[in-house]
Image 1 (cartoon, rainbow, N blue to C red):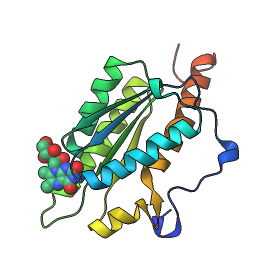
Image 2: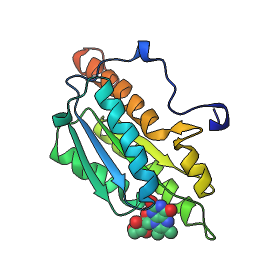
Image 3: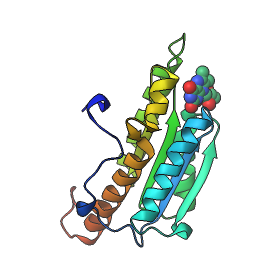
Length: 172
Ligand code: DLZ
């Protein structure tokens, strides 16, 4: 659903699993830091709000959004994690750099998730201009960092549930 119709910070709290005992990685891109740091704040606060412990949240910064998948792989190699949240903001410019970066991040995180079985969450803003970015980083459309944290908790719970279940997809 287009975010014109949706506030990215709104979700049904009554259906949220507890994040107590879950371990998270957060990777934050430094490009457009005034935006990505606002995403980070929303993300971090939401994890804590649902019971995650500060000691179980590991954060790294990477130079730009293109580096998010590599940063995500590095942090997942270092810690045992239930989900990795990637936060960045690629603003459209005069060239098509944004398309290359956004597609690379989407593909990179998809591949990491499928290969590892760890949820890698796409918390990348892809706005046409700075105003659209601000609207989604604590402005009138909420905060995509909150949405990314909510998705991470839900997927972390699914991962834990499937790890404990005998019936898995596959041949073994
Ligand atoms: C080069 C670049 C440009 C032009 N724009 C952005 C942007 O809007 N947001 C962002 O996160 N990163 C940008 N980058 C940097 C790339 O993501 C990457 O860090 C460099 O191309 C080096 O690999």
